[in-house]
Image (tube, helix red, strand yellow):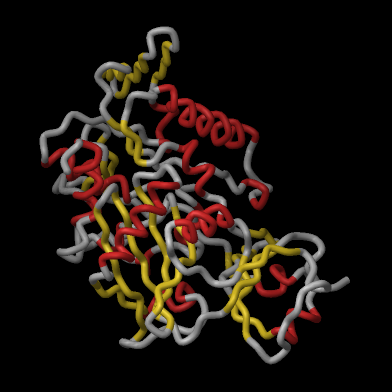
Length: 68
Length: 304
């Protein structure tokens, strides 16, 4: 049986790792954002922390997962 | 994990605003009681009680998904299925806070996620749109075998194939290939292919507009730019005033406060492609003119 056009054109890739490695960071419930465990500075302003400040660090499907 | 919301919380904290982040990953650690009669939500986090009541709640920044694409996740445990479906429904029920200002209200997002409705509203707002057909057969339409078209899915396609996952980008395809293709199982969108083109992302927050063009090594990108995402640059641009206005109007007509509008500039004409009601923007905020986080906080705080 012929494949549906969307299946035929789909881009296939290895299953993505769902969560980034957060070793060294913790979620601060009161502040509502992730912080560096040592410096207590926001992870999003930490140069060592990559995801997802750039589109490059985004996973394959990006915003199409609608926050899943 | 939703790091985009970190930007909002950090900005609200710097403004000394009174806010609570309800983190969907942490419900197990929360003690939650929603008193429906009193329209008051009690959440205890680390022994501290937060009270959210209808009279004092000003605004809600809603980032939870509207659709869960669980059909491609066959290995979810029963507990995880329960967690995902029921907490998602719980969050949707926050629409009970009808007096709050929403960015965006999930009921509006649900409606606005319909791409065909978006095209209708875009045309109503005076935007040009590529000729579009939604179909599961090409038998009764006229296609030019030599011409190129765009084929894309009506909703996000995420397929599980063993240890692999599959995603469907917008794809350039010839009329000849379309005529030989299989469609019956699922409807697809066939669209006029606009090329040469420059892809534009226009982020609308209330009345504010942030526009970038997406280029690779300074040039336009054939097909879906996301295939090239490792190598693209986002360059701030000023849109013509009337296009700005139309983008704001489309987002408003869809009942949204926020929308990531995709446009294409083809031979000097701006075409509407789609709106992403839950569009991402965190990768743009490091540019000084693209402080979308601040615009969102302004909106939530009622600062115009």
